[in-house]
Length: 236
Ligand SMILES: C[S@@+](CC[C@H](N)C(=O)[O-])C[C@H]1O[C@@H](n2cnc3c(N)ncnc32)[C@H](O)[C@@H]1O
Image (spheres, rainbow, N blue to C red):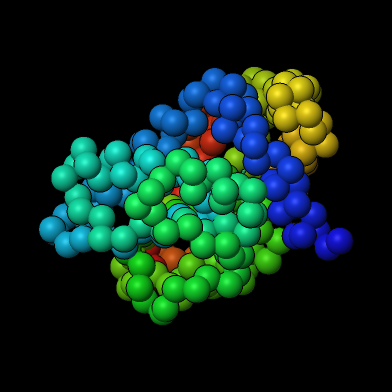
């Protein structure tokens, strides 16, 4: 099996326990990271138009729920919201939670959307798993409208030391595989998380990739002392 296929197979295996493990392992704090990010992006849309939102690597649909909640709070209309993920298992869980959302099984590198169709494209804790990242960023730029916004939430490789960064890495490498492995009965999958962060980019490296793909960086923010990073970029 190739690397990308292995990653997707792993998410299929852990999909039934993914939500439970996620909430426990993040102490529920990921919800506030997601809310802050979605609110920030929605505030960029000041006119009254209805928004087309696409959540790539949607998994079990966590971002979909937050988009809907935050749009309601800010009185923003959503014309269409779609979730895309290659994992059948993750999508099955997502479909059981939402009735009015379109879920499509696909890779980030093969989006079925037309050119210049989407106002907001989000990908949360997903880009690290995309082996052909450059192709995916090109796809994001293709389907977004001009001035459309890309939101990426991700765990980036740490650039400098500091006690919080060291604690995060200790938690990810030693505690998370134990707890995640126990909940999902799949320790290997939860060893993959810290390894995939190590194999990913630093904040500065990822910003360079976004700019190369045709995006203008608008906001960067790190949450919980650098545990999670938010990138908001505009398609130029
Ligand atoms: C850590 S989960 C994140 C799920 C969800 N976005 C969230 O925030 O909870 C990563 C997701 O990326 C998906 N994924 C892996 N490779 C992908 C690819 N090449 N294209 C799109 N999604 C991919 C997996 O199936 C999985 O659902």
